[in-house]
Length: 240
Image 1 (cartoon, one colour):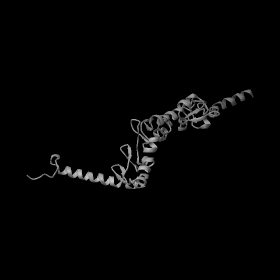
Image 2 (image 1 turned 30 degrees about the vertical axis):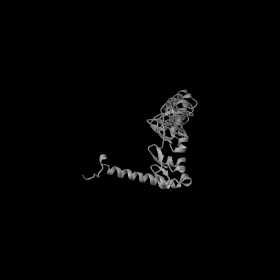
Image 3 (image 1 turned 30 degrees about the horizontal axis):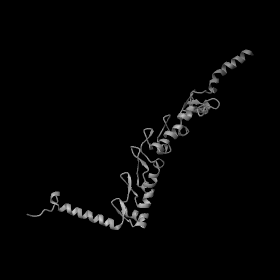
Image 4 (image 1 turned 45 degrees about the vertical axis):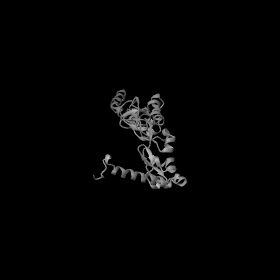
């Protein structure tokens, strides 16, 4: 009888491997290939609770366990980390935290403090929009965008139209980094038109009718004088 028991065990030994489950770092195809609470992540049995309490998670976004090591697995890992708030490194790309979207940089310290609000090559560089960084000049003059030097400039008509200067003075069009008046309807809708009569778009600003007419007349006179002046190469020359 004893030899029959041994024979049964020998016969069952090859089947034992079919039911064996992998430990941390072992290869897997799905969750059932791994022991206990281990999960199959990217082909390796991994403990999902190993990395989140670690300093690597808070400091570098390495919150996802990959086998026996900690790695960046998803955007959530990056958003939980310090570099997301400080440097805008909030998106997971190839197991690294990088700045990939405008919103990554927009809420970061480097955007608010230094004007580095544009994601480029994985980091936040000078550029983009930062109403928080530009503060009063954004709210008053529409200078809400950041140029290559970190200065606040006007980026779009929308910046101008949202500013105080548009409703007050009709400066609602973006031009050369600032806001100017180019549309008659903007001047007519401005408070400066109602209170001071500056209702005519002229030379980048809203002006009263008499000033606009005067400047227009002066410009016409200057043009005619230049056309008649022989020493300036004017077309008209007196006959001798």
